[in-house]
Image (cartoon, rainbow over all chains, first blue to last red; front, side, top):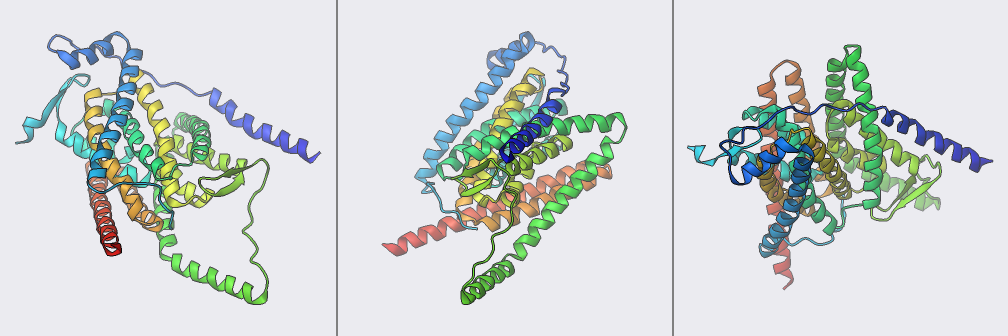
Length: 94
Length: 340
């Protein structure tokens, strides 16, 4: 019996926030077209996708940030190791 | 003189100083790596002061937070400071809580009360949390002495101290990385609440989750920092993508900020190794009290002064963290030299 009460209680606790979440409203996008006339190279590439397909632009931004984060983490780690600031598993002291 | 550092921003269609973006990124990277927060509460006012178009400020900030969090989380994980299981639950709880908070704000907006209610809640939270953490820091020795005395008395009498009462509604979950066993509902409740607060206040929530992990869940401070950053990583990725779709990310600015932030994050995370848990809590408390002062100034329409307060406090805190790292590093080197 206690087990059934716990299951029902758990179910209710899970359902309530899910219902509120499903009702969420969405924010609006920025309506803008960039003048590509005086752009070249990488700036042209980003602006072109920004104008043509915002989904592709968002994917480019997200992947670029992720990849750059990973590369910079790797490179700075090497420099910090060279400076003697190597980090390994630490003990937790309060 | 600094005009040579001006770079063209293709999405915002303007020139902006690259040095400023790298410097802001660096400062917020140090703070983020050290405290386990995203740092939007520093970046947005700082960008505002230097004239960055506000339409792109939040999206650009979230994009660089995503990249920076990868750097910081990877390093924290190496140091054993990330509780992945706890982090995943925190993400799920926070997302649901955030949506509920956002719904509540919409309701308050409809009845015309959103502005003052949100601002006063924000002030109460920042000052309340800041002063509680200061109190906790300054009474830690007294509490430790009292606990030791209790244990000594119990040992003399041959009894044991009763453990603190906790809500043990099943299912119970064990988190080996943090070394805690806790009810699923306590954990979920805490993250729903912190998520609700961040949705309600319109903030990322890292600065709410970090103390919640320490005081409500019972994590060691360094694990709270690492686990919070793990959650910030996913929030940053989601924010980067959704703001990207809405056309609100200035990609060149985000890249420049990410360069500074990634270097800063490495420094901030490494400093966690040299500054003990209570030291982190003390610095965090001071930082959020300054953030609270900045919100008070905003309330009185002094937006520029508010931006300067939070930016100068962030710079000063960076200097303190870097000094702490340097002292700890020198001490470690001296100890190593003493051994050989």
